[in-house]
Length: 360
Image (tube, rainbow, N blue to C red):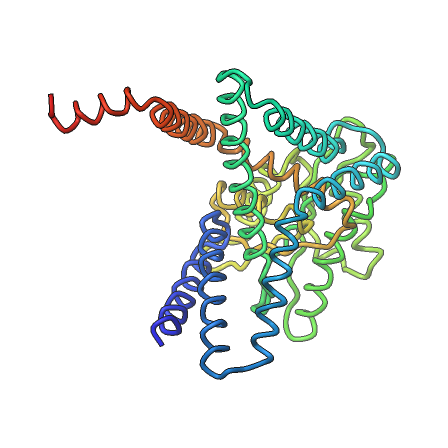
């Protein structure tokens, strides 16, 4: 019975933490703990009621998890090379589009490294320590990526029920320098959907089209975005244009300035931002950085594009706190390598133990 009580209490605690700060990487770790508690509760329920249906459900989930663990690397390889192929074929070659291909190559190199060390047990200690260091760094990166995925998933469990005053639509590149791309159209359509739903019940929100002009663009992105919204039935009085921003941080900062010109107090102003699903979590961090209280919604995108974009978002997320992550990796390497050296050198370990315990 205690496990059910603990799970319920933890669920309330989790909801409270998420509601206070949806854009936090801590939420992913907390959600993982909730999944474990939920799984234990499900097992206890199946045993208590002797439910065949619950036993089958648990067996199915367990088999699925085992399959994912056993074939995970090969699935990731398939996604990596498949995504790279379709991206280069449909979107063209660029450094950002090759990220999934680079991941696939790195995984193959890691597998070859493991095979070499397995077949050659007499390799020198330097090689063994290099392999250990690589695996330690990979463990940290995989752990952080898993936490990022869960945090992003938790963040997107959101339906804008309450009335919104403003919806900031984040820009992206234009086609031929003057035409809204399908990806950008998805962001605008997502905002228009909220606009129309709210209009049926009360006064609709103001749409802020946010995006400056890139070097290869004939006009600011926000101008093309406004034209797209007008063509889809949004009146001009419901649209504001922010045409100076060059990145997500400036999208949030300059849009906030526009809102502040119209609102005396942002504390009571309800703001939403619309972007693509893979981008919504990182965008929320920039909103927090400029002290803009805003929730985010994400538009869907094609899977082959989503996978590579998700990797790009993760790299960008690491770059936001690169010093912190670097310190964590160095500390983890120091602990793991030090522990390995001590365990492989019994005399040194014995001397340290004696010195520590003052047995000399």
